[in-house]
Length: 93
Image (cartoon, rainbow, N blue to C red):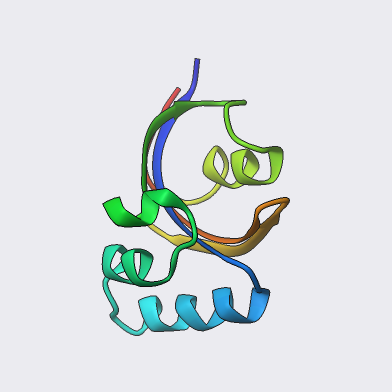
């Protein structure tokens, strides 16, 4: 089964998500931005979600993590929880 490791930042609006993505692409540290802005409890760990299998996350999230480029920041990705920036740190399978 395919597995991946990723970290993310969850915010309520697409506008906030796009602004944070610009900051990260401009050199801001993903983990620090996650700790300051993410509304997910994982923000305290720099947005780290650990390792998970395909199908364990909501479909919109899963699709990005299992098809996107590793090491890039993807988003805004809308789910029922809000808007995410997703960084895929590794993937197997």
